Amino acid sequence: MKTLANGKGILAQEPDYYGPKAFRDEALGKFPELMHDFDESSGLHGLAASMATAGRSAIENGDSAFLDRLFIFLESVLLREKLHPEIKNALVISFLVPEDFERSEVGRHVWARLPERIRYVLRQAV
Image 1 (tube, rainbow, N blue to C red):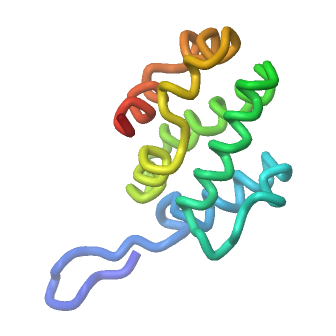
Image 2: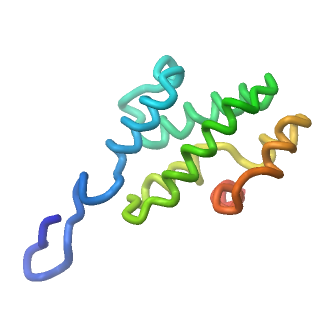
């Protein structure tokens, strides 16, 4: 952490908080299949969009195992004490929305099992 001039606050820098780089590195480490769809220059929103594409595909194909892994990871991210607010913002703006789950029986089943924290974030996009 770095103190700002004139005591105007503190600048938190990675690794003092869980930020965009840590999120990207962990997500791509856990989900290497996202690398083919992810453009590094698109940042957090691009990564959230790549996760959304993979999530929609898993919903359409009935791949509940992938969805379970994805949402376990995202819940662990959202539980971080020092989470950079842009990560949650990227999930709200660029990730799945409740309607994505309504398109199939698997989607509805996954939605019903999601932790409330995840459903809350996804509902904010509406």
